[in-house]
Image 1 (tube, rainbow, N blue to C red):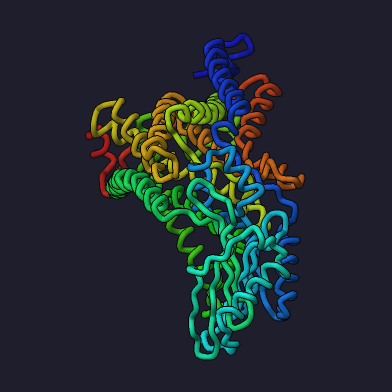
Image 2 (image 1 turned 180 degrees about the horizontal axis):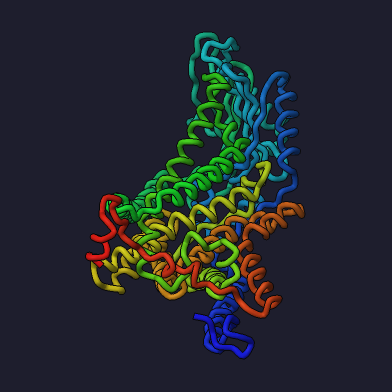
Length: 583
């Protein structure tokens, strides 16, 4: 309701109670932002990569390396992506400790690299070259036809050829490596003999792992080279066992997700039969999400084409990728629509004093006091949330909680429009998850259980443990961390409306995903990442500027849920007299 004011009956301004609420949320947000600024990289240490060559320079180094082998790449397509060997990285972080792992990954052990590929459609022969961030060649593979001609070298000849490649081509100090005769293997092909040999770095151990050089020969030509940290198989089995616990918890939580989707479908059909389902608005929003998601996938085409299987035609590959992108986009949008159709009427009926979902970003709602307060609460919750997560893992590390290091580089930087990815993830994640776990689940559970506590806690825990398959340890820690903030989000929605949780969710996801853009070298990436990550802040700031300019908020009664209560449609065959009698 409008606040009484000497400026007139139509003047709506912030009152003392609003100021207290906003001040408390602002303090919470500032505290969270302060904690995040101070301890973010202590909670989530970043495995920074010292890029001494750009993506384009790495591709040229790879091309030159193939040319040095006496091979022409005329007519070959090329693709390049940044790769990380997660198995080796995780082993070093867990077994050597973060400080020692960072030292090893920066100087002695190669775990990340530019992966360049040169290929021709419908031709098996292709070349892959890996260059580390400094531009040193650390991997090579020349894929040949099984029946391709080549020499049949004896073992001693093959070893000498492999040593010559390591010493004269890669300029490696072979004196610091030990040849492992037991690891030598040969394969007889129809027209050649292939060999593989292994050298191990002398005196090096990362806990129980050794560092090795693997060289492969196809006839008398080098067809493969790789540097590898030889992670013990027993450790890999143990780590997979630990990861299976994460996946099990996520799978159990997925049951609740399926049940919620089934409940949403049931309620949607029930409302549809009664003429109360907002199908048109939900489908329009679903089309928008499908278009945005499809745009994101097409924007990542440089990454997708690096996986092209040359056994099939390139045009078929393109059509298949476009079809998969369309299918995934439609499926994602359908899941969102399934939650939105029943969620919007339930929310409208249970929260009459909040802004109506369909009017959130229209001018009357944008200029309302409800929009400004809810948006401000959402932004402060986002800042407080990031601080909470940082504090959660800073403290948790003292009790055995473990999370892998983040990697500063993002493959989004290899796309034409790098900001599309954080924008899409922010919008889709916030809309789909808030519509299902807050907009629909909270009022629905409240109706069937008659318990506000159950409505707040149960969907939050289901949502939280769906994130349990992240690699944090122990397996349940991620579910507890996310579930706790889910409880807060449900309470915020009940008090300040769905706008607050949409803004909170979008800001957290878009900001964290776009962080790599904001920390990149070029101005375009930094600016676009900041605009995407802080888009909600910009919107709320504009709403406040309009308030200051006009001296009042716009009257909002027409854009609240209560302005469009759920009303059963009257059958056309019912006479007006019968309606009056029924009334």
